[in-house]
Amino acid sequence: MAFASPEIERPSPEKFVDSPLDEDIPLTRVKSQERFSSKSSPLESACVPLKRGDSKSGTTIADGSGSGGKLRSFTDLPTNLVYEILQRLDAKELGVVSCVSTLLNSLASDHHGWKDFYCERWGVPFGLNAQSSNQKSWKELFVDREFRSKSFMGRFCIDVLHGHTEAVRCVFLLQTAKLIFTGGYDTAVHVWDMEEGLSIGVSRSLGCTIRAITADSELLIAAGTDAFLQCWRAIEGHPHLFDIAASLNHNSNFRLWGHEGPVTCLALDSTRIYSGSWDTSVRIWDRAHLKCLRTLRHGDWVWSIAPRGSTVASTSGRDVYVWDTDNGYLTTIIHNAHVGNVYALARNHSGDLLFTGGEDGAIRMYMVCDHCDDDDIKPAATWIPHTGSVHSLSFEFPWVVSSSSDGRIALIDVQKLLKWRQSCSSRQRYKVKHSAPEAVEPPQRMLHGFGCNLFSVAIGSDRIICGGEEGVVRIWNFSQALEIAKKVEALRSIRLENRMRRRKAQTEMSGNGARADQCSVSAKKNQLNAERIGVWHSKRGLTGKLKP
Image (cartoon, helix red, strand yellow):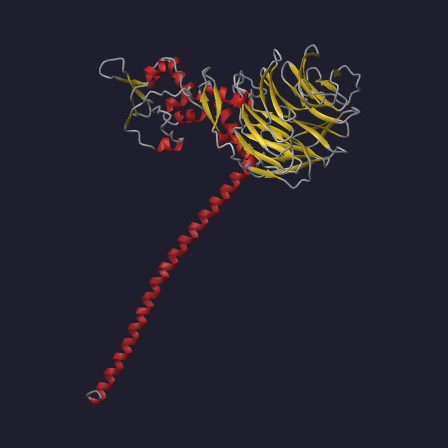
């Protein structure tokens, strides 16, 4: 294979396989800062003319260090150099490499970069057992998850969960346990089975409107207008199993006090609890000691928070803030992100993509880095799919899903706007294909027709959950979309094949019919001519000559 410079368009895997492999292609030195570091490295010494040859032996490289330009196999290079070269490729390019030869397919498939690609997009998969012999490789996990992400453009079925007596203000999907947690004006937390759509449990009344819920395998937290955080621990030895129906004085549940106004948003990570409130503060709690570690003050009501790594993003009024959770410093601020309040916030797993939804019905995407100037932060992309306020956002690569007061749900595929780049720390990061500032991107799909005021939305690998003013929870199930698409495609192929057969048969029949018709016409003409000739002869025989 040949490593071309960024100016040359890289072929797709299909085109690469079909292309001829009998020509010499020079490999130019790549000078782009996005693909290679500016410092001298062994990669530069490997940038010599390549020759595509035997597919079994893989790619061969001209050894410039020796006399006479002796050729040797690509895999004869030092192992560290081979993996360094593969480390510079993104997922698509690794897929292209694996199509060149059997040997390169083995190298590219076993490369640890697939783990980085997967974890950066979706995090570490739950229940991954490295000791299991049946465990899929990271490449197989990545390809399977990437394939399933396309299901949201397919067909779906809708499940409606009844149980709330008033409007549903918040929904939370715990994908690892296939559980749905909901709360609202009826002051109780409901737990649902995602697969069966059945109610698992209902908590005792908390005495206030529940506006936020979050959970992981060990802890479930709900909060609302009474300014406290109601927490339930999982039953010991049973992850994801919460006894929410127990009395409030039970050992498995407790409350955290500290806010002075309604709590509007919650979040969790492995060591901390995050809560935002209308008292204009975000509080960071220690999970082990159940103490408030730090309070982040804002100038207006806090509507939404999104922690990632050592930072937490928050919305207050029209502005968006990014804080360092270790020291409480404000690292980034986005002024006037929307016209009106910024109600919703979402981030990707690595934290460098930030999505906001506001009172103006718009959704914007920002690039956030560790050392960026506040004045330089501009929207990388803008969508305006709603005519009302955007109340909630949720992100599952590559989809952003939003719910609005106009009663519609928008699905946005951000992968079309992203490309990969190699950072100085040898870690793949996103780079946005910037468009004109005034450009507005269209959403890929809209789901509507379900009343008004959809307050909360969540997205999983193949489902979308939403709750609103109607007091019901709806689940859009896309799990069978790919199977249905395969069946539809198979039926379409069968119909096309049958149509071609009928057309071929009709053509043959019409061809045979045309020849038969030509023969019959000729016969009729010959018969008519014969009759005419016989008449003329008879007339000549009677008179001996023709009459004038």
